[in-house]
Amino acid sequence: MLKDITLGQFFPGKTIIHRLDPRTKILLMLIYFVTLFLAKNYFSYALVLSFLVGATLLGRIPFRAMTRGLKPMLIIIVFTGVLNLFYTRGGTLLLEWKFIHIYSEGLRTAFFMILRILMLVCGTFLLTYTTSPIALTDALEQLASPLKKLHVPVHEFSMMMCIALRFIPTLIEETDKIISAQKARGADFETGNLIRRAKALIPILVPLFFSAFRRADELATAMECRCYHGGEGRTSLKVLRYALRDYLALSVGLVLLVLVAILRHYGL
Amino acid sequence: MDPTAPIVEARDLAHVYSAGTPFEHIAIEHINLSFRAGELVGLIGHTGSGKSTLIQHLNGLLKPTSGKILFQGEDIWKDKKFTQSVRGRVGLVFQYPEYQLFEETCWKDIAFGPKNQGISGDELDARVRRAAGFVGIDESLLEKSPFDLSGGQKRRVAIAGVIAMEPDVLILDEPTAGLDAAGRDSILENIRAYQQAQNAAVIMVSHSMEEVASLCTRLIVMNRGSVAMDGTPAEVFTRSVELAEMGLSVPQVTTVFRLLREQGMDLPADVYTVKYALRCLAAWKEGRSC
Image (cartoon, rainbow over all chains, first blue to last red; front, side, top):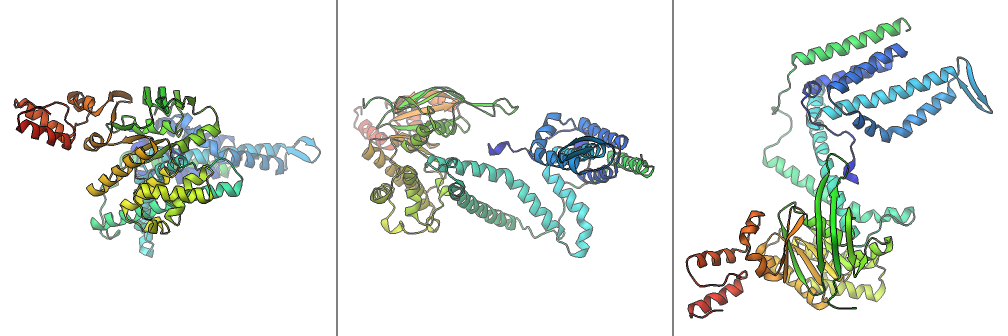
């Protein structure tokens, strides 16, 4: 069913990873991404991988949750792997059959590309699994606050993002309900050709849009009733403060980055 | 066909949500019920007692985890075509049905259900007008957009959309939620009118004891996913202590009469409608039993 969507799901917990400042986690993820793109060989990949596995273990994220989240990525991963495998030349020729040539360099690139995508996705999962959406938007607003000087409406963007995230489960539930109601009136979404099926969506989409607008309208009124007037002079319920663990975590991240950069410099 | 045979039956029905995950949750189990033509059944129970899950099984929207739903003696899941056709014979009106309106005109929206059943032409038009008549929607409104109507009228159009399929069993999930007293009474009257005209079975989920007491001939009380009581309103409302334990109340007039009896007045225990209460009080004043 629709409600089984797990993408970006938050697993509440009290581990050190959960308690890190969300800004630290976002910065760490950026450092992790840069490091991952700097990594060139087995040894540096192993370093970055151990960082990822260590953080996953510390955050007590079940490995099954990671692999389940990876399922929708399967097509992209296979596609990238196959492309790299067939189109990279160099090294020794391993296999030659009609127009297919597989070189050792191709095998190597494909392997690293797949590994890189997997690790990129798992890294973002680690962030969203251990950080609530509200904390994430708070952190993004704080990190982007220097842009306010350039008249970028940072607060408004983060408020919009926050509201959007908040309403995803509500709208999913609503969609489920509307589908059931129209099915009860004999609507059939499963048979017929493409055009018929597209037309069958109208009885779902019209009420869904209608209710989304109604909810938006009600929310806007409710916010105005509580004197919401944008970001100017607004204080936070939860003030973000860096703690010792945040400095420690950032140092670990930086050490990793420097190590991998040095390894790359020496061509290792 | 035997007119007293049940139209819809639940046999040892159970439903488990998210089976096999950490979120596993047994919504209903050991449900054995049957519904006959002409019955007006009130389904009551605390929030989360499994009422909504149960009614979505009766028209094949949810598939039982175990057990069976029979429509006129046949398993509704025996094949896909049959399941689909049962949805027209067992009409289900969801909570706040006005949120499912989508067509440009009321006529088209009411016609959506019967059209899906394969009805067209004059028969379709007749069905739409009959259904609109049952819920008191004026012919002049049929060409209007449903989105221009008032809340109460929208609800009527949505209910008409299910009635137009002319189901043998009509199920309504809190049809009067959020309506004012006048709107409530007239919708309940409409439901009774449909039930009598079609000799249909009507099942109504409600949180208002007054409502089910005045309308229904049979009450089913759900508690923690099972049927706790099943009987006439009089039978159910005499068990007010058990009802209170399930977080349910009895009609206010029943409570008043219980208190009066505790004061030593000789009044019957099965009073649950204001009409009957008035008669009893008048009789009591004259010193006879009612």
